[in-house]
Image 1: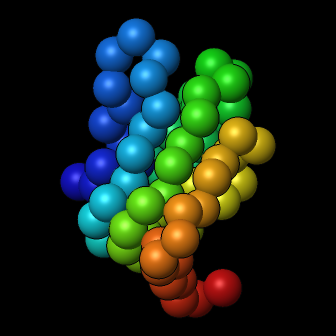
Image 2: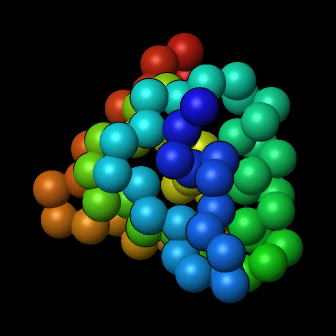
Length: 73
């Protein structure tokens, strides 16, 4: 599955370089977990489909050149 679902240890930021999405329920769980942990999420590359839920994390940063794509809004 995608990079968004696999947080690094020690509360380091979740960095997304290429995430093609997956099951929405898993991404919703990650959003809730990262919001609770106040973890930073950095979208640095391609974030597609369910990965676009990363934008719901309060501490999200979208870097220059990042691409966020979704469907079935």
